[in-house]
Image (cartoon, rainbow, N blue to C red; front, side):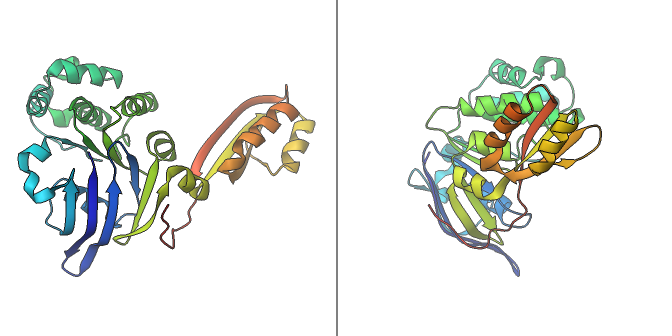
Length: 294
């Protein structure tokens, strides 16, 4: 699905939630929507879902949002950050949501199983009685089984365990090439694996948009943690900018583009002295101050 947003605006009394927002989600694109709380992300997603009246234009494959009706709704799937606490049993929730799209319980259960959730075992339980992670997996399985052409994910893995998050990544990566994905996320691993473009909202305006690779290079840094024994290792780590911590651990923050080289240097220079090594990415706490397009 191709989505065009032109001059979108929304005001809540004195608060301008969106101001002249324009962007395009090309068919098959994978885009991350990020920004601080209050930046307008939720308002934009609600506008795409047709839950808000907004100024400007929203078109889906050339069809205006207000004219799409039920046909357009059937082509969109949404996973919220916080799953609703429904009193109905899991069986009824899944069958109702899947049935609207012509999908079976079995199709949803198969995807839930890949997310490490036994849907059959939970069928009789009230949906609200599930843990946050379980509810999120049910909604993710429903969205992935829906056959929707536009998938809107709002922090979809926030409550998932690491193994299930990895399976979710794999399932999203396996979506049909024509499926369009908009992902609200601040997780750098999600941005790296799941999207090719990033749009940053700030105070209702687009502050930055461009390639995900460029965004990560400018707004991510790596932290390398090494546990090593011996004075030679300590000397080398100190000379290369590492700081000693507890239990033999050393750490260093550096630009993400330097991570691979430094890890390789550790392997070569400290061969046989390293007990453990971890590398992770963190977002630099730097505001985006001007719009960038690419």
